[in-house]
Amino acid sequence: MELAGQRSVPSVVVTFDPHPSEVVRPGSHPAQLTTLRRKAELVEQLGVDVFCVLPFTVELSKMPGDEFVHEVLVDRLHAAAVVVGENFRFGHKAQGDIELLTNLGHRFGFTTEGAKLLTSATNGEITFSSTYIRACVDAGDVVAAEAALGRPHRLEGIVVRGDRRGHELGFPTANLSTPRYTAVPADGVYACRFTLLGSPNREPMKAAVSVGTNPTFSGRERRVEAFVLDVDEDFYGQRVGLDFIERLRPMERYDTVEALIDQMHLDVARAREVLGRAE
Image 1 (cartoon, rainbow, N blue to C red):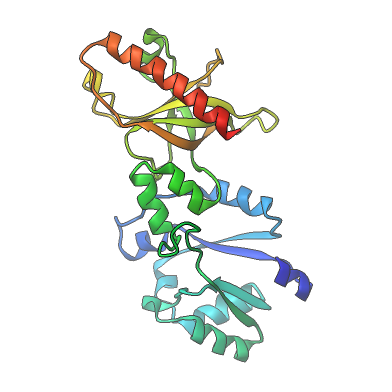
Image 2: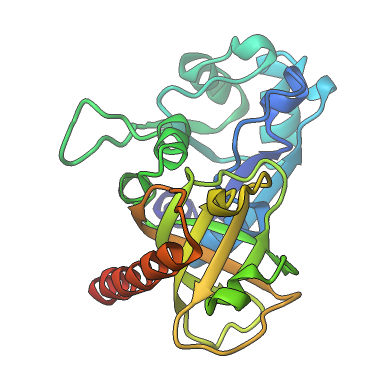
């Protein structure tokens, strides 16, 4: 944005949809860390002028690097300056790199800047990337994921009807239906912030969230179930966001329902403590 201001041109963030891997190698779509809607919100919060989503197609995947630059960056976007990560690759079979982009910029009239990759403040050997963050989420290490993202990992979805078992146990839950490919954290119980995305003026609520198959009841379907603390409300049909703050424990099977209920009380108390510290 600073560079755009210096050039007196709009700042533009460009992304692809669907993920290029799914187009090039169908069935290989990586877990999705952020929905397009959420990306647009984050970009807007940063003060970027335009969020541009380019449809990624088979034809685009086969486009040579110089042709991509001419058709997309020059003809469509009229780029004056291009900022990419220092390991950026583009064009057919990822043959283009920053050196090629810089040379093409000299030809077409734009500058190229390679941004250094971010590394962990506590361990400089760890480079932050989407692959690293997915691995953190997959392992349930949402604290490490937050450190890399600069914000908590979020799941978004619609609250759907469940089997109402939580209600029977005294812990009614909002069951979240998430979009395909969503990066759901490892099975376990988490302290989360629960946000009603259709109510922008309402503050996020505290929640203890279960991710898994409910092994005590021999469940098979993997679910995301949020028990919202101190709120007696039916969230059915509403679009919500869950920000994962800390993993409280792994998913476990209990021999009796009473033992499970006792543990759920402990989970709620622990979630309240963790979320109170995070405020």
